[in-house]
Length: 446
Image (tube, rainbow, N blue to C red; front, side):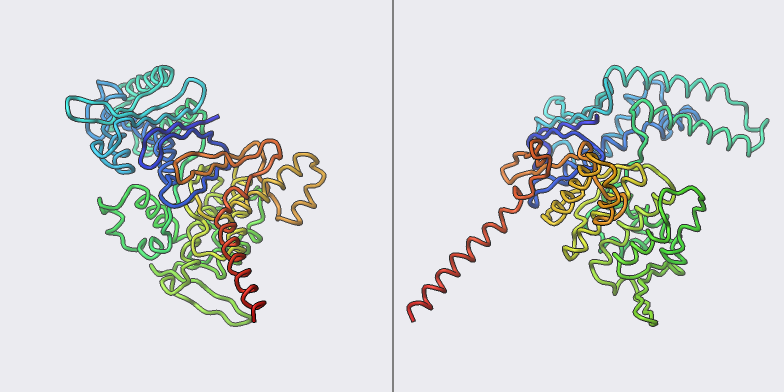
């Protein structure tokens, strides 16, 4: 079981969290939900950095043109510090008590802390002894492969390319095996409506002032939006596969229904196609509703991952933004559907009680199926096929205003305590009742 520990990072004072297949963080703004999500993202993308390092060592015996004789720990320090700074800021702005640790598997962990050198503070990344040893072995293997490579003048370019791909795949699989994690990590940030409008500005994608998460999200969109030149309903043709776990026609119809229109990318321009009776209207994306702009690349990115059969760990910030409560519920159902069909994991940060109650309904559906699998059809008639959430696979935390962390899973009742986050509604109802009684007393006096 993966687990993260965070101490004194931004608004987060102390938090420990088991990372499961369906993870939910809820709380008011500025309580640290995004900070936790970014910390998880940082630790999860270390796998990719290590794989890239090993491949560069195999190719050139260098890493980003730097000598690797001092070993991966020292060579990668600059790269990992740079990633950490891009997510959380410079060391002099961070709390001296900062400590983060991510446990991937038994004996495999990475931690981050602040160390002092005189008056200077610097970020230090550490590895467990077992992880250090296994990575040292892989590093040695990469250097040996580099030394054994024949001169490129004596072999064909096709062979060299094929050999490089084979070794890249081997290194990637080895790193995944060490971390006991075979899922790529993606971050779908908040503010998607604005990013949807900016993604065609290629100069922005290379802008150093753009934060890492936003840049990578925009690059993902830039890489896949041309796949939709014939709409959502036909994008599956880009990934022909006769053995899918889901019906592409029904799934595409589900997305178009949620989006309230089909999406088409044509000659560098994006449109939402609205179908009403026999009439269709082509709306440029910048004139689409804010809700459509918000969910467009949430839905499309998850769908592409399904079509590619790419297992993923997807972090989604505020899926409820600009959406009516009924559509919020549908989006949660699709997210759970994606996770089940695609053998993937999810982390959601949210302010919305509707998201929480929707998750609770799917959690309840998972309990029903778990107790009697014969009830699956009845459950699917209510929530849709493969939308349930297995109770063992859920982490649900509330971060309070006082920085305390509350586990929302009621183990005794085996449900999510939705009433614990509805204090605002209770407060509003109390105010209303006081005002109502005042009004009634005034009427009685007349």
